[in-house]
Image 1: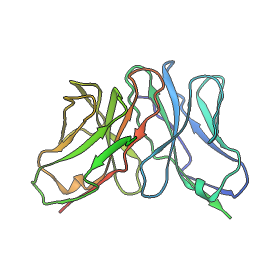
Image 2: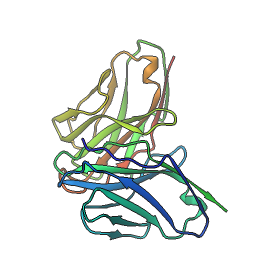
Image 3: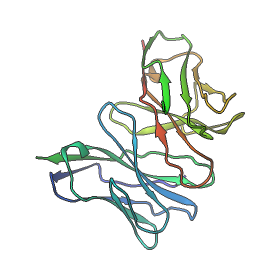
Length: 110
Length: 114
């Protein structure tokens, strides 16, 4: 199973954009790039996913490198409620297995 | 719409006892899975299922059994609980096998083994 690498932690100020990076150099052609976040004492929550093209939804944007070996989750205006652990995960399109890494702990300062 | 429901939310066991964590989804999802999360760590995949009657092992399957007799239910059985199985367990499901598939998670079951 392909792995992802994320920084352990990041900080942001409220109302500012946040760019969360993820490296996945061993990604295969059928792997989807998923992002989930986990608030304290809660289960993970889906944020966004993509395959090759950049994606936008009401929560965030996902920018995928042309070679697909890295991606960036963009929160356009961080709020205090965005403080969470963010997981970048590769999901096999063949098996549906979704293997989590350790994620990035995002702290948002008022 | 209940989504993914896990029971119980909290459980304390003694070493050697057995128990079953229940997971049910009402969204007609094909894919279901179980994860465990230890303090300060990410989630690790225990077992998963791509449909009724089909199960497979994840990263950390030892000490756990699963079955998928119906589309809706995916129970996780601890055969002989050990302190190393103290963890928070999450059940997750997605609509279909293959394709991108957003995963929906339950609220978690916190298990303590003494």
